[in-house]
Each structure stands twice: as C-alpha cells, then as structure tokens.
Amino acid sequence: MSNIGEAEQHKKKGNAHFSNKDYHKAVTEYTLAINKDPNNSVYYTNRALCYLKIKNYVNVIADCEMAIKQDPTSVKGYYMLGQALTEQIDFDTAIKNLQKAYDLTIADKGSFSAEIVQALLIARKKKWNLEEKKRIDQESELLRYVKGLINAEREKQLQKVSSKSNMFSKIVNSHPPDVQEKMDIINQAHNDKLSQVEQVFSQSDENLKPRDLPDYFLDKISFNIMHDPVITPSGITYERAHLKEHFKKIGHFDPLSRRECRESDLCPNLAIKEAIEDFLSKNGWAADY
Image: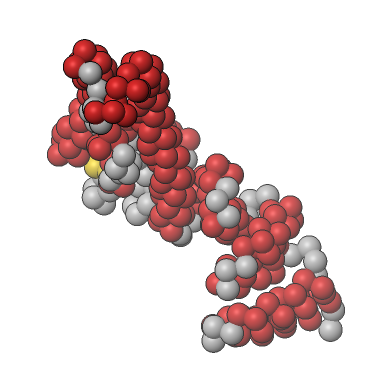
C-alpha cells in the first residue's frame, strides 16, 4: 500500500475515533496520516478540530497555519485559526482570519457560512468587551484622580490656615472664629469643585456600565452597524450596499440561506432601521462599532 493509501486508512480510523468523541486517539491517527502524507491539508484541519475540542489552542493554531500553507483556500483552516486566536485574546488577527474564511465560503458557495458569521460576531463581541473593560477602568481611575487632587489641595489650604491657630486650638480644642470661617470657606469651595467634577462626570454611572450593541443591528456581510437595512425573501437582513456588492462580485443569491435573490427582491427593513436610528440617537458611540 502506498503512503497516501496508508494515510487515508489512518484518517478513517481518526474519523471513527472523532465520532466517538475520543479526541486523543483521533489526534494519534491523524498524526500518523500526516507522517505518511504531510502535504494533505485535510489531515491538519482534522487534527486541529480535535485540538479545538480539547481546548489545546496553541496546537490548533499550528495545525491551521500548516493547513493554510498547504492550501491557501482552506476555509476550515482560517475558520478554526480564527476561533483559536479568539480564545488566545488575539482578536484583531482572529477577526482577520474569520473574515477570510467567510469570504472564501461565500465565493465558493460553502455550506457553513452561518457558523463563520457566528464566530465572527463572538470575536468582535469579545474584542469590544475587552476594550470596554479598559475604558471603564480608565474612566474610574480618572475620576478618582481628579477628586484626589481636589481633596489634596483642600488639605493643603486647611493646614495652612489652621497652622496659625495651633496653640489656641490645643487650649480650647477648637479654632478661633475667624480661622473657622476661613476653613468653612475653603471646605465649601472644594465641595463646590467636587460637585462640578461630578457634574462633568454626570454620566459616569452610565459610562461605567458596559455598553452593548444588539447583534441584529449588524450587517451579516461587513459586520458593521447597518444604515440602510434590507430584508431578503429568506427573512435575513443585510446592509443594502454590501448586499448589492455581493450580487455584483459573487452572484445573485442570499449569502446565508443560499437561495436565489436579486436586488428587485429586497425590501427595506423599516422596523430595524427605526430601531437602529433610535439606538444611535441615545448611544452615539455605537456608530463606530
């Protein structure tokens, strides 16, 4: 039997182990297949899927990169590479690879574009959540810093005024009326400053809450927020401009349902458009999502 034939036998055994959810044995068989035929990208993506199941993301990345090297059009290679990079918190590279997988499967009319869309949305959501955490931490720290400066200045001025009456204060356990008046003025002035700061940060409580964007506001092609949403006969909503570009470059079919679709079949999704406009009017940050 040739090396290729032996490799296929190991692949079949690996597939059987995978079906039984015995991923470690499947890895062993796919590794034997690779040893016999190291130029077959499918063996790498099969093994990568096993590693993905057992959450060995480093090996997923290594195998997917090898698969892509062997076959630059490997949808599964880019797809699982994007998933593993998402788990490794390398969101920008993950999104780039998932987008590549999506573009390839759309061009080839592949069967699992919906799964890739979901993985893309997850990667973008996790990236957004990480950026939100950083933003919240920065805003909280800034507010604490500004209040700290005001209170430090208050203490400095109070000490300067009270130092002149230390002897009197020790004797009567209070400040002279004129000193107390000055201290009251200082306290009031700094309380006013704190109030002004809190007014400047009047939206602090709102800003310190994680901001979220509904997935159904996002175009299923560009994954950006929609401005002119249209609905296809399959009931799926897209950004009109991106769907028209899809028709022009790829073909006249719905990217997700794969059903035939032309521009004349599109209807404005007024309900989604109104909801998005209302959301943006209250959440300006979302325009840059």
